Length: 220
Ligand SMILES: O=C(O)CCC(=O)C(=O)O
Ligand SMILES: [Fe+2]
Image 1 (cartoon, rainbow, N blue to C red):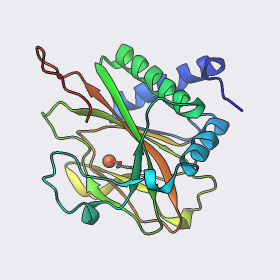
Image 2: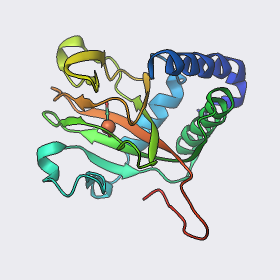
Image 3: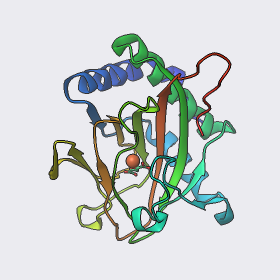
Image 4: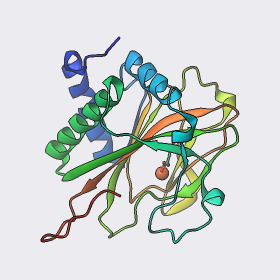
């Protein structure tokens, strides 16, 4: 069944407001049950029904001078393009969050890109930043987890660190279905710990517009 986000408008408003408040006070927000359960299950189903060959070994950004990818991360990804039901609802959700945060926090978020990710058992993503200070690219990172009944002993947490205290865990996020993590891309080094079972998620980023004159800056 299709979830109608429109019927959730007031709930979404409360959620977005809470996220904005969290971002303002601490720079990150972790919200369990952020999206309707049936939408999360539909997104999980969409991911699971993708052809295995669609998944590509994820690369590391243009800024990390081709460190051997596999040393840094072992996830496989499929970029999300507008398509049928659940993907469009995810994109609509992202766009509403963008508008809300722009209105409330004046972030000037301009484009959004996101991908499905699969971490096979044992796969990880070592500590990294999603953006590099001063390069005006990725401003805000979002991750939606798609794993029902994730047990505490299954690993796979995302760990956030404070840049100034890189050895001290700031926050640990269990990748449970429906949990949404949002954080300032330039401020929080983070990592994905290996898990005992397959781990599914969507990771996305908002960018500001850095186009000047007729030079475009596509989100590649
Ligand atoms: O899946 C996660 O918890 C985080 C993924 C991540 O850090 C990334 O894709 O940049
Ligand atoms: Fe990341």
